[in-house]
Length: 461
Ligand SMILES: [Zn+2]
Image (cartoon, rainbow, N blue to C red; front, side):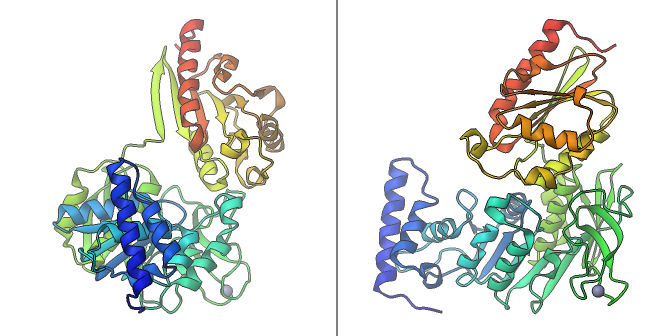
């Protein structure tokens, strides 16, 4: 590893100075100090001392939740953990957090670190930071203009990962489970669920052919998209065997985990399968780090993840629900549509899916809507779909292609006042599905929907 030269010390001191100045001014010091250090000394991350044990967490979904769970559990058990929770998950954020815990001579004050790593930044981080445990939660299609496709992201991570890192991977994810062919690994998975299917019902399944022999791949079961369990009938390639296998007892909110040490029983922190994957990932990491079953069990005992991306209130007997539905992300949107279609009763839907770029009038492409399962919204009990925002005609076209009758579709560029188009004729619930950056707009639309329901005296007997 590169030693400390004059350039390194200049970078360290300037960075610490910037950090102090920003903190005096009560400004965020989690990005700029690291950016400055790397600007002055491009291999700064390689030269600064690091903790002995490093955990990195990357992946398309869940990395922040997994990092927080691991961090909280470690701290509850007396560990003093260096982390980039407060700041950015790219190289500058990692550098800032290391500078914050470095002495003037460049020595690190902490023995263990956990870093959330942006997938695309891994090539700027892994050459310098060699994680003891490298976690990948999953790899999915994400925003095309940021992440291209999952194979692209897979290759970025795979080509930069140090061979010395022990990988912790999702055996149910037929993409990310193939990371680090030469690395030692521990796999986690969730056992077959009653809701699993024989065939994919999603438009997008990014693993239809065998990663090894490229012939059609047979799934034993599909959970969603390429999440499931597969075996190739031609070459024998199969989903890896899980070292930590979760078995869900939904009725009793219990996550049983079959581990190398026996079966362990944990309180499920959430009803959502996504957060159960996150919890299982954290359990696997914590047990690998040597925390006892009792300690890990205790750290989850009182934890209940409240869906911050979800709200529900009932007005005159009609449920008004808001649910985040990440725009530009066909997988996240499809999962939300899938959830709404299975909810009981007659539903009216308000879509607020335009993202920041759409709002700025950009001509960014809309290909993601053709990867997204708008077909799930073509249901007899979905009686009205109000499409709002500047892109409303694009979504309308997509819904028509999904077979939704035109008389069920209404468009408006006015997102906040879109609830005025509610029919409220035998409606049991109104779902406002909104893009991440439209949360405030969605809350205003929710208030409007509540007002409209009260004003019209609509009541569901
Ligand atoms: Zn094969």
